[in-house]
Amino acid sequence: MARVRLACVALLVAVMTTRAWAAQGDGDGGAGPPFLAPPGEGEGRGGSPPRVGLSLAVGATMAIVPLTAGGATFAARDEVDSRRAGIYTALAGLTLAPLASHLIGREYRRAAYFTIAPLVGSAVTIGLLESHPELLDHGHPATRVAFGIGISVAILGAVVGLADSAGAADRWRRRHRPAANSLAVMRDGSGRF
Image (cartoon, rainbow, N blue to C red; front, top):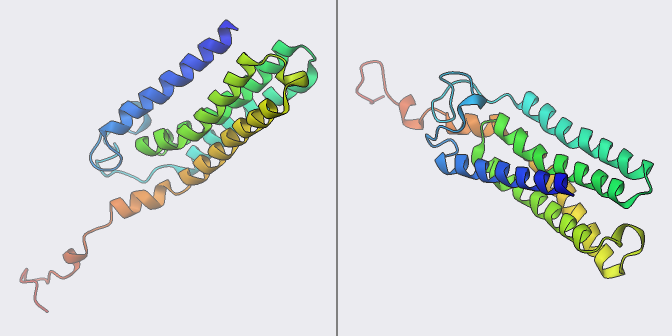
């Protein structure tokens, strides 16, 4: 039980830290965390486009591996605590997947925004499991429906967040497009044709 609470606190700290980075900016000159961008290539300083392939690979791995491990743990055990641990493992991966993918893509504000849905879905699911221990075996139908909705929101939020991070390079190119007026300047500098 203490590990579950520690994992929830770690998730909350990760999201709040991301929110602090997002306040620094998202393509508008904000610095973001220095360890995510190569030297001299921070979010607002130009540089190269984000590495979308890497961000998607890391995000998908962070979703699939815990989901698989959690599902295996849930299916292999009959004890309630082991089954809960499997669900918590899967939810942690789903919550962190869009966060990691957007952070690697140097989109700090979007990382915060697209982590909200999986975090809320996970919080609802964990809250229901903690308040209704019988839920996994024979809980009340209304509680089971809310549990299913919580898991669905976490899964859908993670999928949408990962899909959104695929557009990081396009958004970067739009932010770094040269101004349209720069094309009208002639060789003599007069700007007339």
